[in-house]
Amino acid sequence: MNWRILAPLVLLVGCSNGDRPNYPSREQVIAAAAGCGIEKFQPTKVDAGIAAYVAKTEGEARQKEDCIYDSLHTQGFIVTR
Image (cartoon, rainbow, N blue to C red; front, side, top):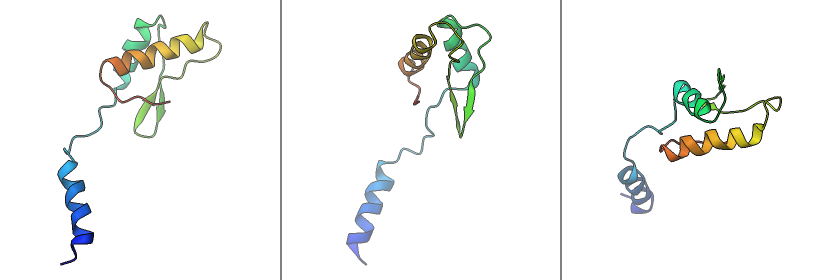
């Protein structure tokens, strides 16, 4: 048995908790947006997740987008832009 190959695999399997990533649901993104002053927010579907892109036509778009991401992150969700 070649331990140089097997050892890293054992470490990787041992470090995995088997949990799925904690991404927010569409409803959770909409709720975060409402808390940031955006009513009737429509999140953008991106691969397996949801993006909280705020259209530039929305007043203070960048601040509201930051607010949504900060809110979701604070709740323990994995969020990226």
